[in-house]
Amino acid sequence: MKEIMRRRTRIAAALCLLAAGVMALVIPAMAAPPEKYLHVHVDDPTDGTKVNVDVPLSMAEKILPAINNQDLHGGKVWIRHADMSGVDLRAVLDAVKTAPDSEFVTVKDNESDVRVAKANGNILIHVTDKRNKDQKVDVTVPMKIVDALVNTEKNDELDIAAALRALSDAGDILLVTVQDEGQKVRIWVDSKNTQD
Amino acid sequence: MILLAKIALGMAGAAVAGAGVLCSEGLVQVKVIEKQPQGVHIRMFAPAMLAPMAMHLAPRQSLAEATREIHPYLPVIRATMESLRQADDVVFVQVEGPGEHVKVQKLGGSIIVDVDDSDATVHVTAPIRAIASTMEQLAAADSNSL
Image 1 (tube, chains in turn brown, cyan):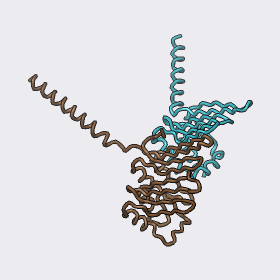
Image 2: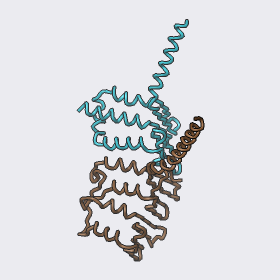
Image 3: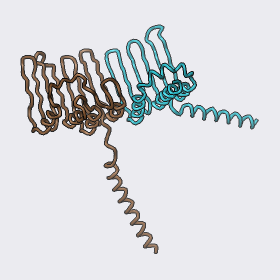
Image 4: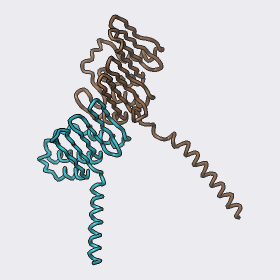
């Protein structure tokens, strides 16, 4: 009888260990995805000013739809004076989305270089001011965000809330860098709540 | 003698319990120090629970204008308070410049604002729950007065 009890205890202990092991594996997988933060960093070495802004994207997602002011309603912004000149923005974006990675626009003149390309599911915009070669702007926008932005019922509105959700679901990404003689600006998204 | 001791103990216990209840929502802390020779020095600590209570006791007519002004922004304020409550501790804004320092952060259920420049040093700590309760009292005052 004692032997049977011992065996049962051992089996119970083994089952508990197994259950603990399974839970240890499953719980992290079931945990909520990490919070994403939108970071803005402005560095002005000319006067030594540094500005850091860190906003949890989930916070922006919740607050934005509550704002009803002028052209912003329910997380959507109405582009009041958007003159699309008969261009179907959605059709253009759809064409870009289905197109292979390539350079779509290259403008080179005496004043600036402008390059618009698609690579790895992102739209890349690169602008260099030739008059002052220190002035550079780089913008990277994942296609998913552009999709979410323009996926609205009306042509003259952009869904900022949907774009924020898409941004939240996207991985860590450097969105914008601006560099000129004095200032450097970086805007990016990652899972850290600091800029360190 | 023992009876007096028991009464004193009871009163002390009630005072401690009362202080505990008053401070249960945290403390509002305001510190303003002007850097001029005869500048203002203000240091204030108050239980955060007093703010919504004061709103509750304030004359409705005195609050009418403020409540009317705040009314259009109530959905945004509520959404902000709710998301602030749920957010992890984070430094929202930090500005470092020559002779100036600004920091706005959420830390342990409170919003903390620190400003330090050539004119003054300002520090404000306000528990988010107390801010939300105060705003709700304002909203209620609005609905009662209209």
